[in-house]
Image (cartoon, rainbow, N blue to C red; front, side, top):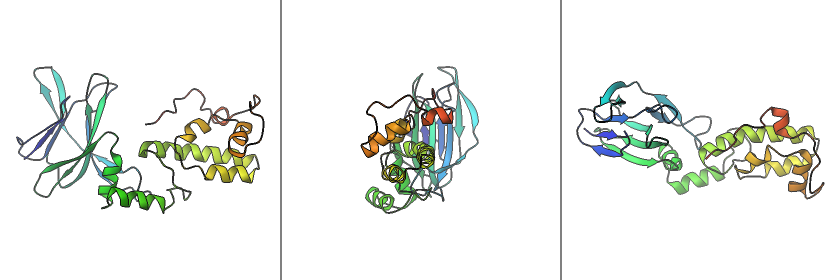
Length: 227
């Protein structure tokens, strides 16, 4: 049976008794975990749900580090996260087949491949399904990586609440028309005058020092970078 080694390596070796994954935890880098993943019924075209697996601890004698070993994986789709270098982690997505075989589906940045697999779709079918369906909040679906979209949905809610309180229906419509998830990471720091200038083409080019949404929400100074 195959063993997937992720302890600063990326190797699939046929040396286990059951389908097995070996991960390396490192403080502030990775907890060294493995989870079975399933569709999120609220948003089947977005990030999945995880059920984290139990592990036992082994020691790597050459480097004197502890490893986490996940054995007896049943058929399904999984995500594992492990230390890649002293400062970086790696996520790997894979399928365990009925015969115990392990097939790699992708790594960091290839979440859409996994989401398509979970839905039984091709990449093109997933893209078409997203384009024709609303997001989990019932509003038009945003475009970006799954992590970007998940965070941008929260920020869009804040921005919509902000502009609705300003009593400007045209501005609300323009915010709803935005599909680029990354816009909301900058949009959350704009004043109402800056939003009007950017989205409606009116208002002062250099907005006055009035309250921004991040001021109201207590978000100023927080890191809003999501990849």
